[in-house]
Length: 198
Length: 277
Image 1 (tube, chains in turn orange, cyan):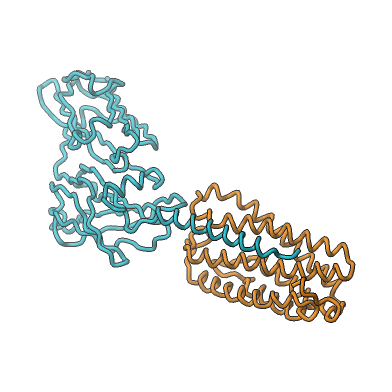
Image 2 (cartoon, each protein chain N blue to C red):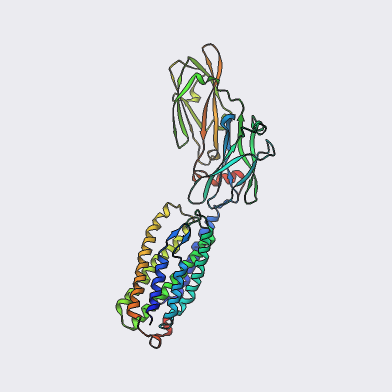
């Protein structure tokens, strides 16, 4: 019964990962990804209360993505990542931080449910996914403000970090897929709620 | 897997500090108005145009809408504007190609033999700036009557604003003197050599025979902090020459210098020179 919820988390992650742009228009906009997250977390909040916290976060992120989409459509090609003004970059920085929190909620929920079910493999998978995602996103989040003052040639090394971010995000999506198969049928409402796991 | 509130607060505070520091540092580089480069031009009427250069913020969407040279008249001049180079960080260079109208003789005559030092520039954001653009002189009669005495054979230029021009002397002649409109500004930084000998060591008249080569090298040697290295130059050296019949003529050899990338300009020196904070 909760498989659909985890499936939505998986597809949300895919939409966040893949950016296919035609000019300034993103064919797989992040807003759809965050709406998938919202939908998935709405279903999963009945399995574990921790997922409820993520619903508001995913809605806020969907709104920020919509703003970003509108601004991108109004910008010319010169105002791309490096040409963005400070305001746009600050909004992106807030979105990146909230995104990190959202993934933390998802990973924590899967971790706690796996722990209750004594599913050590998935529990470790959730923990590893979260730690690697946290490290790589933190590097990106902290590098971002420096990018306005670095020479753009020296910023090319961030391409390696971005590639690693994609690989780790694929791992997180894979972990959601695994959770769908291993936790999807478990009715955890009465068994799992715990104050210290929020 | 639980989030430690203390760690979250530290993370947020650190991120805020990093953002604040970078924004403050970035804002120190933002220009409130475009910086026009000073130009020292002594150019021929038949060039058809001359170039003004300015530096603006890399993300700036403003451009120049009209230019007036108040020392010449109150009418706006014709020009085209083009993006040139950026430093991929803070600044972008733009070029203004000022057109000397060929069909409108009234405007054209107004420019001739006048010294232009100021420009009133109207920008698309509504701002008007009155800027010192150096010294621009457009000559109606630049004497190059001695061109047949020595003709250029080859030119070697480099992107550090040095040039070597080799001439072939076609008649026995003497170089009596060399002069330039801007020598007094440049003589300590413009290193000129004739046949590898510094100009200061040459005694005039300098005699040359038919078939001799005359190699003219020039190089600008600025010291750090010299604001003149952030200017543009385009002026001739006038060679006063005399042939064996005693006929005196003039030969022009051009000197050209401008920095083509914004990172080569000292923006702080330029701002200080303009009195801009």
